[in-house]
Structures are given as structure tokens and as C-alpha cells.
Amino acid sequence: MEKEYPNDVYKECLRNHAASLGSYATDGCGEFTLDDTSLSTLQCSACGCHRNFHRKVTYCSSTSVDRIDYGDEGGSRGICPTEERDRGGKKRFRTKFTAEQKEKMLGFAEKLGWKLQRRKEEDEVERFCRGIGVSRQVFKVWMHNHKNSSAASSTCNVSSLTTP
View 1 (cartoon, rainbow, N blue to C red):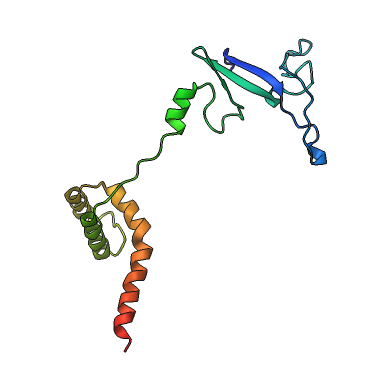
View 2: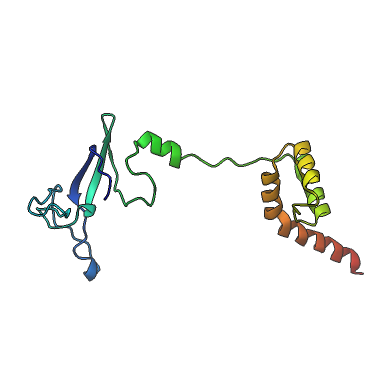
């Protein structure tokens, strides 16, 4: 059964009764009222719709937040807006490389043949990564992102040298 949150209130019904006609029409139900005759279902006694069709308002720490809850897809059920913003709105950190780091990584990746072999060069790769100040994972992702572009540029240079 779904966990109930005492700070949740269900407001007007948002069910589109004219969806099959390609239009939009709601029934005008102002607030979800639990049907007392059947305790096992969550039907509204005013409009007959399920509670999920009603707009959910979450109250937390004396402020109200209007949001429609679409289930656990977003993973934000019962979270205050500030916590939700911190968790979901935070931008992912992007690694910035210096020109010297890029040069060294390019040279080392070409030396490795654009593949990280786990057994043979593990210590050498770790030593290289410590030397330029990036983690092995960051270097692996950089190699994956740049292997096609640098391979194409190196073949262009070779073909331009071989043509008369």
C-alpha cells in the first residue's frame, strides 16, 4: 500500500473527460473527498474519479508547494522543495583540463592505442593519472570521448602527407 503523508492534500480534479474526443474538459470537482461507503478504494465521492487525478499539494514547514505528483518516477515523493531543488537542480560538475593535461593525455592515449588494458599497464596508468592530477575514471572517460575525433584527425594528417 502507498505510504500516506499527513501533509498532503488533494485539491481540484484534473482528469480530462474529453480526451477521447481530442479536446480538454474537466468536471469542476473542487477538492478530493473520500468516499465513505467503500473504504478500500480511493474514489472521490464528488466526481467519482480516483485520487491520483486530483492535484496534490504538499505542506512542509509552514509553506505550501503546489506540484502534481506522478508517482515514484522522479523519486521526489514527500520531499520539501528546498531539498528537492538541492538534489534535482544541482548541476553536474564538469572537469576542466589545461592545455598541458590535454597534450599529455593525447600522447599517452595514443601510446596505449586508445584502450585501457587492466592487467598490463595498470600501474603505469595509475602513475600517469597521479602525475597529471586526474583520476583513472576521468582519464578513461576522456579517452572514450576523444578516441574517434583524434583518430580522424591523425588519418587526415597522414593522408595529406602521402598525396603528391
